[in-house]
Image (tube, rainbow, N blue to C red; front, side, top):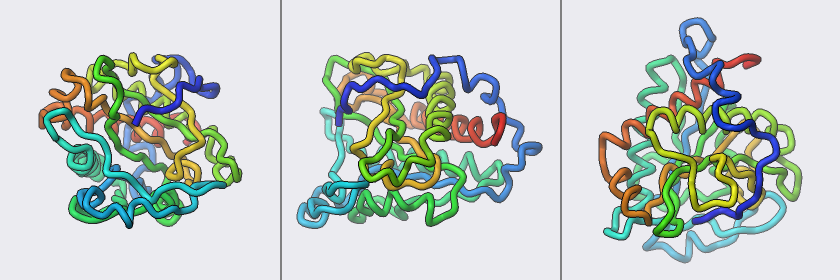
Length: 253
C-alpha cells in the first residue's frame, strides 16, 4: 500500500551517490561467496488464509499483522506473482556474479512467511544485504517506483543498519531507474524515490542492510502494463540486481 509521505534525511539526490559504483567489477570486488537475501513480497496462499496472515507478530517494538494478500492490477494480476517472478530473475542474475542468494519463500503457493521472519532472514543467513520486492497499490492517477529505507524502529533493533541501508537505497534507486526507465513515484510528497519508514517489521527487525522496493504502481494503467510484461519484469530484475551489485562493490564495502 501507499507509504506515509515522510521526507528522507540520509539519502542523496538522484545521481549523486550510486554513480561511482553503478558499474561494479565483480571479479575484482570480492563478491564471490557473499550472501544476499531476496524477499518476494506476500505469497500465493495468503488471500485464502486470513486467520494465519491476520495474526499479530512482533514488528520492532509493536505488533503487526503477519502479512497481507498484497495488491493487484485492476485486471487481477496479483502482486505476489509479480514479486515471485522478479525475485527469481534477480537471483539468477546475482548468482552469475558468484553471490549466494537466499529467497525467503520457495514457491508462490504458500502462506507467509510472516513479516518478523522476513525481517530476521538477512541476519539468519549472515547476508551482506537484503531486498524485499513489492509493487504498490497507490492512487490510479500515479505512476513510478520508490525505495523504502529503514528509519529507526521503536525498539531500536535496526539502529546499526540505518546508514548502510541508506547507501543501499540510493544505489537501488539509481540502478533501477536506469534499467527500467521508471521514474520516482509522482504520487508521494517526496519525489526523490526514497522514503524512510519505521512501521514495517521487515525493516525494523533486520540486522543487515535492507530496503524494500515498490517497483511500480499496480493500480495505474501504464504501470500495470509494465508489471504484466515479461520483458519489463526482466529489466526490473536487472535494475534490482545492479543496485545490489553497486552497493556491494562500491567504495568502502
